[in-house]
Image (cartoon, rainbow, N blue to C red; front, top):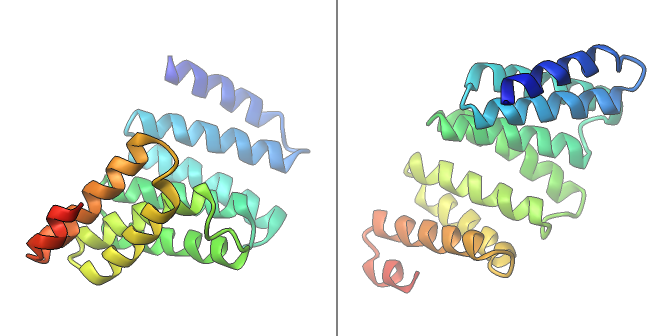
Length: 169
């Protein structure tokens, strides 16, 4: 079903040359479908197409550009390419902070991914800082987001052998 959807999105994308915003969104949705299929190569290629279009339309400092960087960073994180994940998620974080959106739901999810990537890189200080930022935003969102943040912070402190703090989470 996802491959049929992507085929249809490609047909739509082929006819959207005059509307770059819609074209970028079509590529973004296609890339998300590749994410769900765990097809990293096609996902990154398609996310990159959407991101290039959005940068050309909006410049670097736009929420949709931040979403694109976040999506690419998240895919790298899923593939255990944590240095690449940090590179892309850091760009998303900078944009969100420059836009004054550091307390948005998008920022909370972005902070969670960068905290997770830093944890995998054993940079527990940065992981903890971003994990706290994620929790401050996401703890009142959904039970899943709250649980993930607490679990992440507990694991960060466990990795640091800070058992008292780990138990707190």
